[in-house]
Amino acid sequence: MNLNYQFIVFIVILCQFFSASISHISQSQLEASCDVHLLLERYYGYTDFFEVNMKNNLKKDNERLHLELYVMASKDVNILFSSNNNYDGPHYEIVLGNEHNCLSRIRVRRNRIEVVVENWIPNMLSPFRPTLVEIIQRNDGKLIVNVPGYAEPLMTYLDENPIQINYFGFSTWDKLQAKYFYNCQFDENSKMESQKNNEEQLAISKILPTDSNTKQAMDFCWSGFLNRHTSFFHDLVPTLDKFDDNQVIEFQQEVIEAVKKIKKRPTTEKSIKLIDVRSGW
Image (cartoon, rainbow, N blue to C red):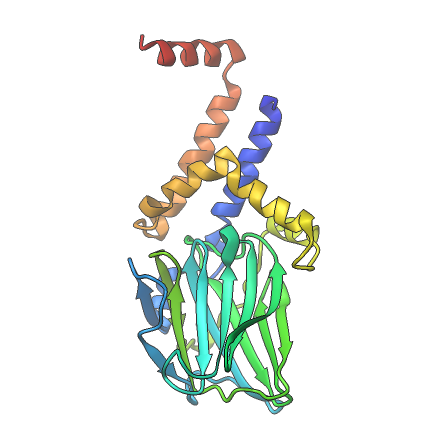
């Protein structure tokens, strides 16, 4: 792989990990306007349930339910919608960012749990910026999941025997950290615009087919995760999760400046420094 190509790959990965959070609603704005549910070091499971009510149900004339939630996580977001405040009864479960932030699912439980919809779209979630998720249940039983700026709809499922949704809850997978924002009340001056994705992410998602069995989509997601540059930044996520908005922006700027400096160095100088490090000089 030549240096120019490496540099392009590096910048694309930066865009995927640190996509301009300053152009979206900030974490601090959400914390001031929403209820917050933080998951830390918890295995998969639902322990807290929140009631659907007039405060959070933005339903229109043809809808039973219309919720807008925001999430910050690196992958594996799970949102449960049920008639009762427990996991064991009939429910819908929305899974986002499975398979290394690539695969989304709708699961339905009645007598058993069944995956009814899957869709491969990468890089929707981020621990550095909020992602808006809309969940709509229409009067005809159609369940719609939107992630504005990425996929509208992301997934749809027509349930001929729709579940009455009275509660929702949050989980994640394998003790991953996730922050959920719900019951958001924005005033007119801070009314949130629909979240937009950057051009690089949109271009990537548009080249992927939506058939969950399509090998190209799976290969794309796995090759991106296994890329050594992606793995490097993935390992930094636990530390970067502790940064506030200003520190994240400062980190991004410092990394980009470091890339520029390295890019300007003569190839021989970089080779000499590499030899020095490996030989312990």
